[in-house]
Length: 225
Image 1 (cartoon, rainbow, N blue to C red):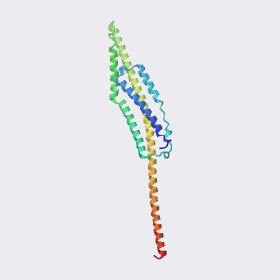
Image 2 (image 1 turned 30 degrees about the vertical axis):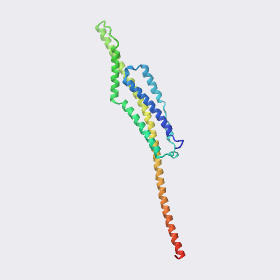
Image 3 (image 1 turned 180 degrees about the vertical axis):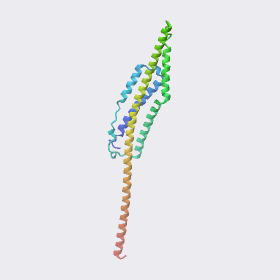
Image 4 (image 1 turned 120 degrees about the vertical axis):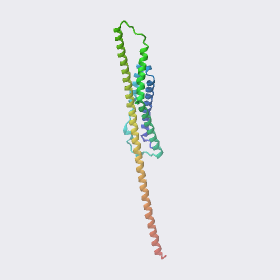
């Protein structure tokens, strides 16, 4: 293969993006399993890491080189198509899990459990009178509702950012797919050219054979045989 082949450069960038997405996906799964143990600092750190993961940029012009420069055989082309298929499947599985109703329901359930656990650990509330107790109860309900809304907003933000990251990886995979299709078309065209050349050679050989037979016949007639 040619040293100018851009496939390996793009493949390296795609693999880095997939590794980053898998790391974020693993952390997201951990938060889903135990959201009550997650602090604000932990959420902020994860959010910053998600933003930093957007630094991946892939220049589509890297695959605009002339496919004729690459000496690709069928085995190599099959390997490249296999890499594209495998990567796309990995991304699809992560996206399907994050957007599944089961995962969303589990996230909401865990948040509510954590809220009830924190509320129960505060101990008895001072009750100077019915009116003040009612006001305290209303304030507690308001605080609980705000906490739930904040947790849901943070979870939604994280899911959207992860979706953006996975879409970026999918876009890069699309670039690789287009490149492999172009290379496959080039190989098909070369095969047609070789077939045409072979047919032309066979026709030329047949015509030469007829000429040789005619020359032999004339030679025999000249010698009187």
